[in-house]
Image (tube, rainbow, N blue to C red; front, side):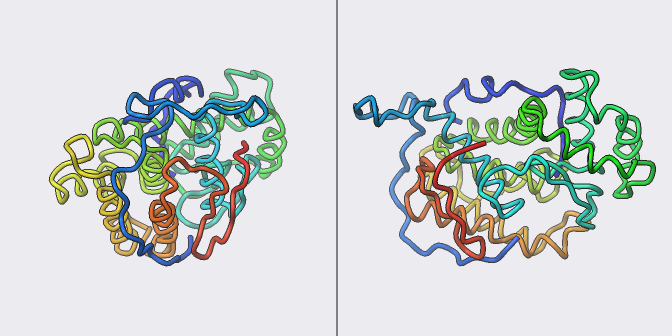
Length: 304
């Protein structure tokens, strides 16, 4: 993935505000709904219906939706319905070792971000001895793993048994990709959990910053230009996101990002699956959430 990570943010910070802000699947064909509902708890949301105590959700709606976003990432990254914190593999896709729930890469330095944050939280952890080697790889921006001990893979899997390490993976992923997505959501006026998920998945897969030539900022800017504004200016969110996904699919099929011409065309199923959820009207990511296309997986209970 494309890391722009700094210090990891705390999950509560990500949840604090209102969301104001690699397979082929069929493109949705249902008619666009009217302006989709806002995320529960936002100023524009209607008051939630009263429920009996037995039916009440134990977590805030925003927390449930965020866990659902984690699970959708697991489907896209690992074909699983819960985050795979212990995943680590050289997929020979130009990233070096890819690891963790979001696909952190040794080449781009976000594996290093995770390990450094873990070092701060748990100074004697099993991964600390690999820090210097990870620094060299990140500094060189190399997909090679030369100098990284063969024991790193085993140590990563062992560290993933630690709840602290799992939380750090989430925090670094939020800092690197969810926070930039929330900035775009606020600027454009995206108010739904599904809308934010579209921006988040684009950031983590294609890059969150201005130097990513196929990244979130470029796609959002092109969408804003072709739609003559965003939902904040009165453009229906459903229409804006449909155009966003159309542009994203075009860029996945014909990327300008170096080294991605072979694998990104196979990933068009990600925006297609998200568009299917929009066509179904599941703007709140209410379970069960079926991720269609060739994924064919259903998330029944948000969990991380």
